[in-house]
Image (cartoon, rainbow, N blue to C red; front, side, top):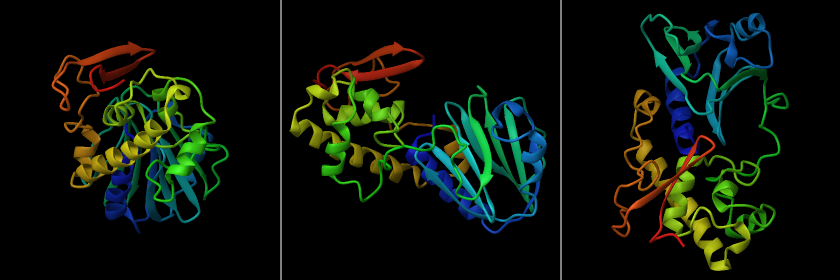
Length: 267
């Protein structure tokens, strides 16, 4: 699942490749991911508009045009690529957008993602877009605001981190990474955290996401689409050695999601 750091870099790569190009054709290869419009309107409305810019907004990717925006919620397996040569759509290719000699492809192996075409900056029809918290990498999000927002959310701390109403942009994988660095067990409740632990959690969030973003910044769009997360310390590494203490990484699976943590480091 692409999270905020990936989506930010993907936005930058798309901006480099497609800004200023005119959309000539929009093709829906599988209607399951198209939401908010009939397929015929989705394929027609954006023709002739130019790409203006691309940006991440939490776990959404926005493709801004002159009068409309494509909004992509990639969910678990949504991926974006750009091709300059002709290719046939495969079974996982959902949508293609041809702009001059470039074609943007949205693929989704599990077909769980959602793609919208909305009037510019009008996101009320995009499921899950409104009433979210500030971005986890927003430079104006300080410790005091983080602490105050945290007080309004209960439950296990990992679930709180993944709650987009608290902070937007963190998913399952990077929540594990943040909590390892903070030394906090993912199954602790928010109410059980001491003030110093809240502060450590805030700084860990900023440090880990910034570090991941820096690593991803040198990767191409194709490399980002492959989602090779060879930099992870704990997530998806159940049974391996914890890089911080040398102990074993534990793994718990529940409701399609995997949680990895170190019982030695995280209390």
